Length: 84
Image 1 (cartoon, rainbow, N blue to C red):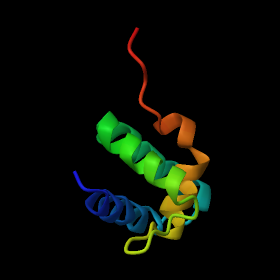
Image 2 (spheres, rainbow, N blue to C red):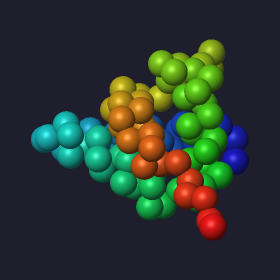
Image 3 (cartoon, one colour):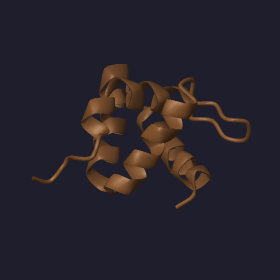
């Protein structure tokens, strides 16, 4: 999947959880959704994007503020688990 599509999907999740009255609840909601429903390759691609663009902005795509904050805050939670 192209990173542009992943960013679009991540921003849609962020837009949904931006309606939460409690910001921390919204941040957790974004991270929880990505953790539960995105396969490891998708999460890895999103985290690699942030490694390259820590402010969430590339020349042609940008993470919205809530999504950027959630993925940055809960980065460790979003890392794919290694199977022993």
